[in-house]
Length: 390
Image 1 (tube, rainbow, N blue to C red):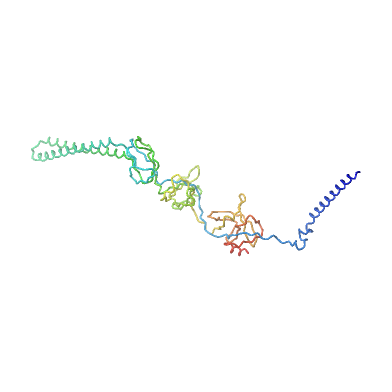
Image 2: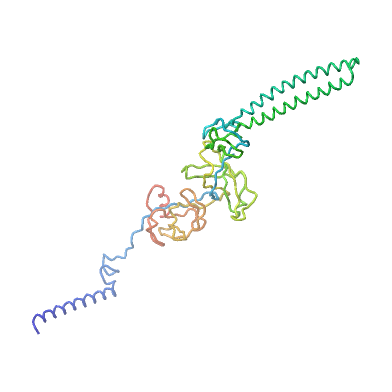
């Protein structure tokens, strides 16, 4: 064989020997890990079997408190009084007496119709009444004179009867003219559209010179100093409802603001489709912040549960539908499934899984596991909890 081939074969053989030696050494190390200096207890001083240090965590004490059991619903705001102002007669708009968005009192004139014909009729009827009154006065004088003459038998009885009939006719004529005048004045009054109650006007739908027919909308009028808030509650909660209960409501239009109200009435019927009953609450709205048609989130407190166990929200860990917390006891962690109840700002009620006085992890929950050792960090608000845990 050529020297070059022999040299190459020798190189291949050397590589094969190295691979076999390394593989054998690795297999021996896998089978005997305790004999290695970095594993097990066979490594002298460097292999002492010391456990990893405890994981630093923050804890909070589960406290006992009172929880208000509440129902949540979506409410629809309505004006205390609301109407679309209309006219019940036909007329030509002569003058508009209001500005859009203006607050008006009850009886304020909003629109005047052309009333020239009726005013002329009033003048005619007034003149006619004056004539009828003069005729009545003349008939009364003649009747009184005939009455005196009849007593002395200086006038025939037939003449007396005639004058008495004339007097009655004159009286009837006066009353008829006065009735016609009252009817014309009633028609004249309808030539003005007035506010049926005090409130704030909306956007007008008419202009001067327009011919209005009965039923045509003129302007909306709403009393929103008091708001009716209607919402529905499931029939299963019907026994927990009563007039006079307090409600709180919020809206995205005013973040952070809470509107308080009182339940005024509960509908006498349950909706057969939704199986819910309508509840109406009244909310004072002096600044008119709430508008009819707004949606509000309603909370209705129906009962109070005392001696409830409360923990911070950040202590609860979610895993799908499961909820659990980590309880610290004797320096070790215990994973405890929990059943949650009502929620408070920053806290949540625990129905099962945690007792009042136990310490739950609120900081570092991602670093711990069931049974792990932990060390409570000495931060403000946790020193007492840490001392108790130790």
